[in-house]
Amino acid sequence: MSYPLFLVIVLGFFFMPYSKSYLKEILAFGFLTAIVISINIFIVKRKFRKRMIIISLLILSVFTFIKLSFYVNYETKISASALYVIFETNRNEASDFISNYFNITVFVILMLLLLFLWYSISYLFRNENLSFNNTIAHKILAFLIIVISAFCINWKLSRENIVLMSIKSYDDYVETKSLLRKNLARPLSNNITDITSLDMPQTYVVVIGESTSRWHMQLYGYDRETNPKLIEIKDELIVFEDVITSNVHTIIALDKILTFSDFNNPNKEKNASIVQLANQAGFETFWISNQRPVGLHESVSTLIGNAAKNKMFLNTDNSDYDIYDDKLLPEIEKALNKKGNKKMLFIHLIGAHSRYLRRYPKSSNYFKSNKTNASYTHKKAFKMINEYDNAIRFNDYVVRGIIEKVRAVNTNSYVLYFSDHGDEVYDTMDLVGHNEYYGTKPMYDVPFIGWFSDEYRSLNPELFKNSELYKRPYLLEDFIHSFSDISSIEFKGINYEKSIFSDAFKTKKRLIRKNEDYDKRK
Ligand SMILES: [Zn+2]
Image (cartoon, rainbow, N blue to C red; front, side):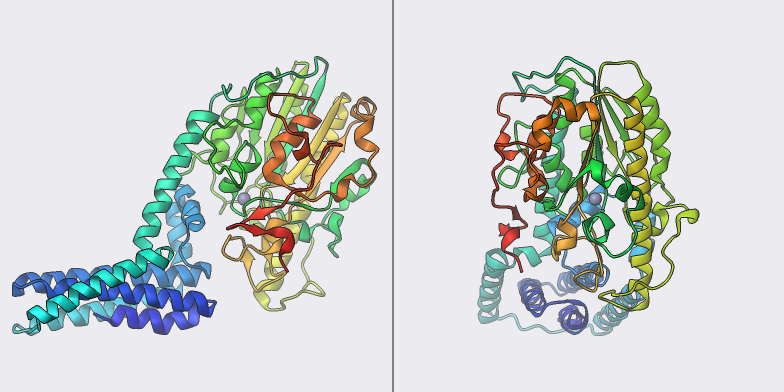
């Protein structure tokens, strides 16, 4: 029965990245194995015991498989945030997920486990007189082992226990969802009051990017031409240098960025979103999205977007398919040309969501040769860096396209662009993608860029007087205050200290992950 533990020890040595996580996993799984073995000591009837042993073996093998295959695929243990992402995965994506998940290594692990199961079960059936020491002394010892192991798991190792972890994460997830649905999916919210805004023509556009790290943007000093279009109009932009996201997963990040939730109040009870705020301030609101609307349940951004008066979800394919953001441009133009005095457009891009290769048309395949000065120089790194940079370059074309369409309207307007989070693409470690376990800087460092029309500039001259504005360190969880500020919306509880655009702005401690100060990291 210790065979699954043996596999975790031997294979874990190769797949688990840090010795601390490796040791914790072994301890946790060791205790679990001890509990399962000890339970069997109490079963007196031979036939029952045999069945129980088989069931125990199956359970331990399944856990071993989940644990090891997760490490093979994600280089991290199963965590709440990793599970969130899986819960959000669409049903139709399940087959894609499985085909991506089952690589050769995972298959070998599965074979090793099946081989062992087949051997042990046939052994059990061959040996009729399987004897077991179960004297009183053995039972007392078994009882003690169960109590102590259970205590240890509960005390320090619950994060390593798949069952406890999954149940807790799923509960959290369901609660978050129902709160969001109750509060945010409706056009109006009771949780914001005393709203005032300007009564004059205004056209404001908030562009929410996806998986776009400023580490790969020429505007932020990247040494490749990934922003040719935005560079052209650089003098018209405010390029904020030091804005970070609150979380590196879309749903958890957007819950904080687009609503009143923050580090201290995740899944805030009395919540409201920027979409509801705009509705209540009298704007004609549009939610134009290139992210598929339906997940296993509705995704968080869909719920928030649902509050808009006009909703357009242009993409129903999952991210394994070719999805290009330029498809949004004609829809944006239509929305801009609709009648109405005050308009607020929220654009949700697919951006540089993996798979990068499928985020730009073949004709935009610009970077083909190996990048010079790359931190990691293996074949996969070169390939992924090129694909990511091409996706960023295509995103540059799309964001510039949106700005030009808004410019053409020639009114009091701004375009604000930021991303939900970034990706690590072999910048600071040998890894591609994003997960909070590693939480590297490129995953947190996002672009935050504002374009303002001439009319907006002449109406709000004070905003452009502060030449140091772009240097302000900012955490996107406070975005709702910045958003209200530049949209000239006021409401009860607006806090100008949290607006990156305000004279009253105050620098604050930027807490991420589990109470980690971003600015004190190495
Ligand atoms: Zn995302």
